[in-house]
Length: 187
Image 1 (cartoon, one colour):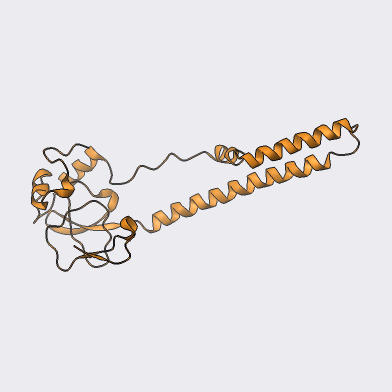
Image 2 (spheres, helix red, strand yellow):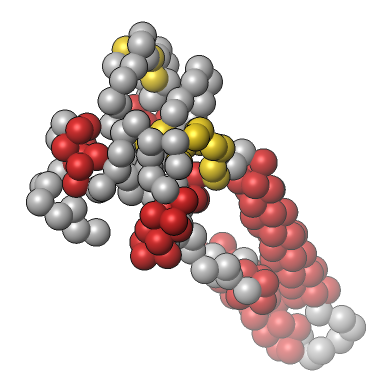
């Protein structure tokens, strides 16, 4: 998205950033301004990949070189059975086919469970932020944050968007998820 006159807000003074985005550092945005910006720019969230249909995920379980090798083994076992005169059941081919099918079904079920667990975890860990709107601090889900919002952070808060500090006192930030640094960094 274009930044207007600023080339990069992350290296610009917080006051200039607030001015560029039409934010009042003392009162924050009005509820109407925030709603309008949310409509214009959309929610503050990463775009998720489209959900893969279950049938396609199941077929994906069979897209593996080892599975191709087992399918070749089934073909060879069936060919040997035909050459030997088709006596009895082609037990080798049936056993290998059962293993391939069972592997595909179990893989599909495990993948679906993992996808559901990740979705549940994302819902449980939804971040909310203290935001100054209409002169009052409100808790807003991270998806509802917009450009120009003034965040009010307390100890233990997670920051759900890029932000610049205007005032701080002994601010230490845990950046492990971004940098891998285990110690909180003084800002």
